[in-house]
Length: 414
Image (cartoon, rainbow, N blue to C red; front, side, top):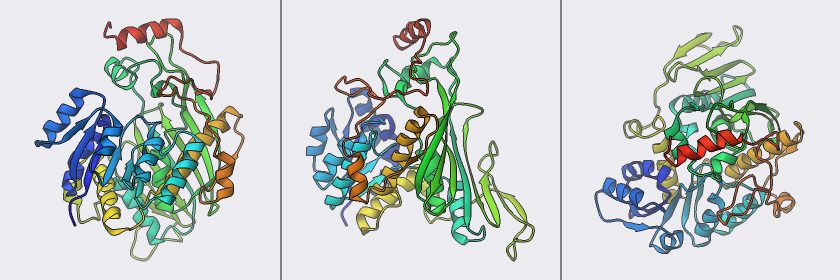
């Protein structure tokens, strides 16, 4: 089979996947970004001629087999649909859709297309999460009853460089990102390991805005969303979105009738596997703390990839799905379910913790409920204003003095 011709849209994140694509024998033939310096740097990394574009229409007109979408967090669905309509395979970073209506449209487009759609969610492929799945699949934990997933990514309020890079202008999506929306890193590893699908969600906020002494352009005063899902197998998940409290890290715990497995916070990827004393499987210990090892033929290729090797497995699995016709782990239904959890968890927060049913977009009757639901907390690329509060307290906004310092930082005056 000829190498898959891949285009990359958005080099802020997309550049990190170039090496992964090359390791997987894909041919990166076109790059698209609005920043010429980013295009030049990526082309230099490739070390050969590659088509460079500023406009997605031009990228889409290139002779491509697949596109990796690494553009802004909340703008993937529209571009994915355009690719699918042209029969171009899609690997989509971050969230599949930022509105419920986009989720409906994306599923419909994927069902009509012969192209592969896959969400580029990498955290399930981290070494300890692959080990958690291996143990769950082995059945020694018994029926899974409860699981926790936490993605905690605080930043120093005095880190001016990160502020310039991550929030470079006032209406940037990160300044309006509800804490429940970036849920994939917390939720996907649990869904993947356990095999359960959320059917109901409720959530509460952790409201703690930055003090007035700090520069701040963020219109979300919440530090986290504490989200609970009821799943189709009667299990329950407790997850966060992208949280900003305590110490940086991501952690997961899966509890069954007979035992539990978790990666331990602050322990460098170590896993703790424990069983009830009366349920210890033959040949195993009641408690075992260990460093999991890769159980994969491509471990050597993954080692140098981003996010502890997990980026490599995302790209490899996507390309294998194209080549073999096997359904992706994170297909359009998996992806839009997670997006629905994220969106409806925020609505639960705004409604004081009210539970919301998660739609099944395989069902046309569920699609009908949301096909016109375009509520969004984000500014549109056309300048359109948000139609949904982004914070648990809708009237919250940074103070004038915080915004003044924020403007000076992003203008390189501080």
